[in-house]
Length: 317
Length: 271
Ligand SMILES: Nc1ncnc2c1ncn2[C@@H]1O[C@H](COP(=O)(O)OP(=O)(O)O)[C@@H](O)[C@H]1O
Ligand SMILES: [Mg+2]
Image (tube, rainbow over all chains, first blue to last red; front, side, top):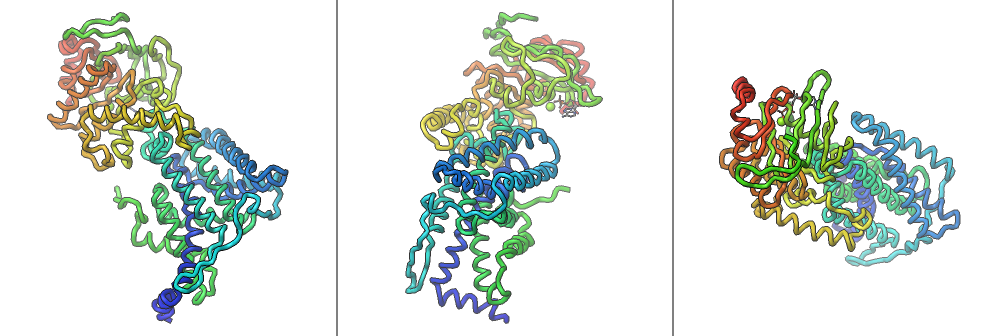
């Protein structure tokens, strides 16, 4: 039993390094999507102290809108652009109708308001698009569906082209976001607002503009993850769960750390896959991916209360 | 008093016409009256001080000017027009920059990035072009960067350009905050106790920088101080506040010899 936990999995990893690479690759693919979603949470939280419960339903809504528009006979890429327009409209509406009137309310009220947004989008989405499952327009978007087989260490490594595309696009998006945040004045304004509200106001930063911007970024992220996840799992309201996979990432990386979101996302993606294959399936009958990340986050927080990247918390009494 | 044509200072500098006029400002917080019916003006190019013991209402006045507080009564006139009620960011975009009594910097960002945020009011390229980072946005960024480097040189903080602000000692933080405000090329610079908490040497440095800014760029400065001594050599005209009321207004010499002012300061222990 102890050997099954502490020795055998590692022997297996060394014995079949190609399979280990396969596991890590698949973990990386999910991990980068977790990172992306976590980034959406972090940007909104930093600039408004709001924990955006609606991130998950935004993924569903974006994917449904894309598929729905295409079903009207609109070409795939035009549908993508129109969907981005819809997500921008959503950001403007949320800022105007929900956030602005609630400015100054306790954070928990704003959190509950995002639950309200979630419920609204569920109802609204079902009314417009219907509740049945749909198929993501993967090939229409020109996303390749084949695979490439590599033979590292004389073994076998299968890379789905869809997964490669996801990794490339998500990496570009994360890289683009980081460049945007670091090297443009708008990005600097987003970071500034997250750092000190008063100071941000004094240099002419408008809360409203930044809020629309970060919710729009969250919308773009929702669309990309919606396409990537929808291409494997189909487009349904169940897509929402991808957002909840980002929660342990936030527990680990912190709600305010951009680095934390990225590193935490990749870490959790790979570790949960490793655990599932080498420990979960042989010892626990599988299905550990649904909860492993939360347990991991809990354990890390037990030893590092400040999370992976937070400054050490100094209790103020 | 209402000399909109400007005046000549004791040391021979020509001061311009009225830049801002506060008319009968009253500010209440529930039952507390922080400012009681105060009027004063600020002229182009002058260094105008507001002094008074702690709790006199000076910071409140600065917050009214910068739009952080909405006055209960009274009007703010700026560049010859009555200013409607504005949000702080709107006031900032009119060219009013400020520092805070308790320093409000972006602690997690570098000195350079902090000072760069001072240029936000001058950035016009749309969000979209910034997202793509082309053309105008790129040009603007370079142009702003040059201006910021000049401010950094001017305030002698080149050596900490890349340091995260959170790691700096207090005195340097104050200087970075001044740099950020200055980077906006403000038409009015508001400084809330720029020398508070500094040692003698740092105070002298800060005084010199304030004078240099005014001299070099002709920036109009309105500064607050609770310690009477520090500002007397610095300012052209002084408003004295006590318990929310204006008890004196004039040149440093006039104010120094005013009985009401002397009484207010003798009656209060201040550090
Ligand atoms: N936001 C606020 N809410 C309630 N009272 C305030 C607020 N700001 C200032 N005050 C009160 O107004 C008075 C003047 O404070 P302040 O303007 O900070 O004085 P000073 O800067 O001259 O030391 C004090 O009594 C203070 O408690
Ligand atoms: Mg004060």
